[in-house]
Image (cartoon, rainbow, N blue to C red):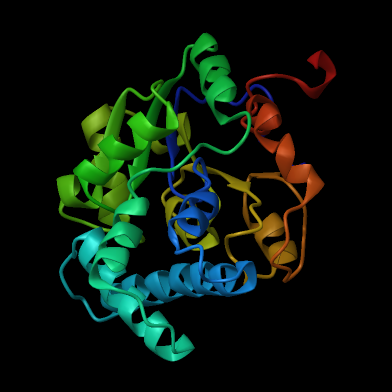
Length: 257
């Protein structure tokens, strides 16, 4: 673990949502037809997620406008199915896209959010996607401790545009040094960190599979989880990773736990 120096003075935390707080993998795996074997469903799920990220990064680099999460996801699903030569019915495809609106939280996220509220912090979702998507995910996951949900649809911007983060700061009335960004995506934290926002990385086996996590560890202010390398595998450290978030944020001294 790597932590922000205690006491940090952090008053508010912005959270990425999908992948960081939410276990998208379990929900999507269940949505694929059971006639497909587990290996195929696993491969399709992970390939689909990577394809989605590749497209949104490409759109940002090309200066294209923000697009609906569902539209991008549906298009990438078609391409992934074509590459894997897997035929699905239209209703099955619709069901798969809708599965991203209903996800469980990763273990211990809910209790950690409650703990952060006890420290007097304000908590916000700051994530790409639509407001409808975020509302559905809050309800399906039971993560109801957030004070506000900021989506790319709402802000008319997308990560990693610096204006995405500065708009959230302006709307909430905080200075960068009073806040932290918590995410399982290094590109997100690189953008936030350049603005003076404190950064805490959550290592999730489903995310950043092509990142050198040793370098990420050096770049961020706080780091929770394992330096897992390039494996598509759950890690035992990830089971309890969120419990240590107050320490990583510099809210609690390591000596006090």
